[in-house]
Length: 292
Ligand code: UTP
Image 1 (spheres, protein in one colour):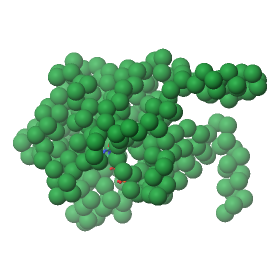
Image 2 (cartoon, helix red, strand yellow):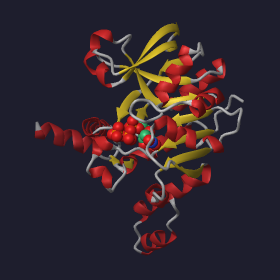
Image 3 (cartoon, rainbow, N blue to C red):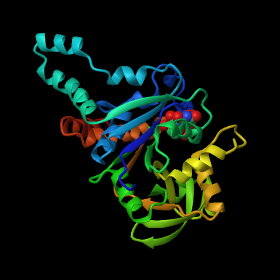
Image 4 (cartoon, rainbow, N blue to C red):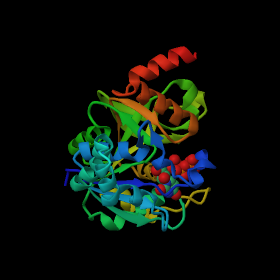
């Protein structure tokens, strides 16, 4: 019951903060230095022991599947042209597919992140906990973030939400948790307040889009009603559960949160990873010094 083997990655959102760019290239396929953002999420899942990923996609959207499908013709061309280094990179994608299986379910309309997660319910067993990873939240860490959350789930068997401390001036853009500390980095969540004014924020702990969902979360999602924006939002479902006295834990993960959900944060995340990149880092640092 407590080994997390499946992850849901919803990628059916409109990505309005990236329009008009996201009209043709969905934000999960945008590059983060030299890989698409979603690749970091998939690697995190794999390194956390996940064996199966369920993507929730827009109807008929083939972009993600095209990226991950095998490409024998391309590989042959690269081999014939002796582009060994590039061939190695392309083959790494095939290797990944040998270790982890992908499946796809459609969300017919973008009716919210919670509604997207619900579309994957048919691929999850009744008593099975699953990881849920939003496609625009990358974490740079020694221990993969979802593995950190999984360890907490093992001890408590209740939903676990990733959290990260933010400076006061940023709190108004995030869901902020009211918490009771129970151990180092480990909290009981009392309430989630969406985008509070800084002086009304109940803590400095923001909700990050990585979760371990227990079967009970799906029961709540199934009966959830759309909110005032006409969407079913995961955070609102957690709030409903908390009001019913259900236990939900928060874990302040170890690592750096690299947001990729809006243009500025995506640029910053590119910079951070670029500067720390084994191949490009040194040259980029030099370039940056010269440029400012
Ligand atoms: P976001 O809150 O970032 O929404 O979704 P969004 O639509 O992608 O982007 P903005 O806010 O309009 O700029 C968090 C995660 O949930 C998925 C997104 O693809 C992202 O991975 N999502 C969101 C869905 O799959 N379906 C939805 O209806 C909404």
